[in-house]
Length: 435
Image (cartoon, rainbow, N blue to C red; front, side, top):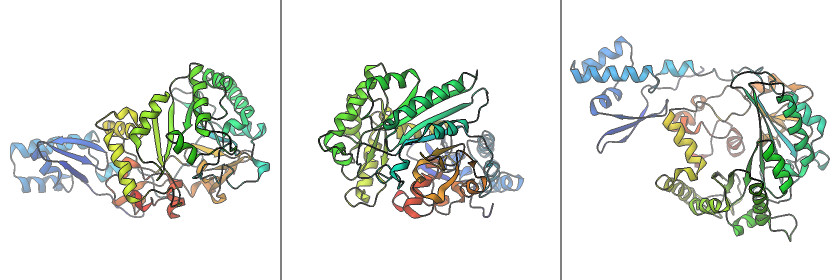
């Protein structure tokens, strides 16, 4: 490490009205403790002989003190409380990573064309600043990208092919070919699973296409931004006579009509509407089983949330805790991680075992970076360049001077690497309003 900014213990004392609830920042464990254990945990400087001697000197050699020390050592042993040595063993050096690790998933941007003109589109209208001649991915590029996947048969191993855009359904032929080709590879396996996924506006999802995707177990996420008025305002169709909201809902109805299971709706939250609870209720009535909300990434004053609106959004999210947590995938993800004590020591999975491929075959860290060539790390015909990849790997939230000071760093994991970069020009520095 270039610098050590981890301390032990690092707790937040959350409740003391009846029983003491503390949150261990590094393990993300919630602990219910009595006042004896609390006093020991809040004063311990180390768990070596010297540290324990100091504890006994401070609290006395009573039965209560010995019981508290024994309990603390057990918590450390089972990693419910983490000390520096434990954390250090699980952290890479700054910039250190295995650049030759296998590729488990590829996200194919099969089409940069789109039927909609979303006001907040990070992809510059879907085309990522690329020429129209590169709008559609060819079969040669798609096949080469799929061939990059780690072709081994192992228990618990899976490989995934994702479809993105623009709007991926505008290059349906390539989706169909890719799924058939990847499934052909899957026939070689006994243990390894092949997984497909897609993010779509649903406009081009006919009943026949829905049937094909269902039969091949393709997971789909629908982009829909609330009620009809809000959606049509934020995600208008390029064809002026087309109602984009109705087209998206029709696509989803086509999916349900072929027996497709209830899916996740992805909603972008803007200043137009921060009322999450009514939005979730609407999506449930439409047949969606969960909602993934994302805050808009824009400097447009008409869409960017003010500080007050951010607090309003947070209040709506928190209200779901006393209503029905299953309504929100965002809260479910955090809640399940807290229950299991699964800390997130690193930023999002960018540049780890999967990459995004543009229609021309260029490989990027992820789809969000596809408009910035400084994040291009290779090509499907030549593979990933380990030297370019190494510049973006091995970072952890404890390496970030911003995140290292935050008690919630191992819950959020530092946020999205791309969102951070486009907001602050520093991938390891989240937007100020997120802090």
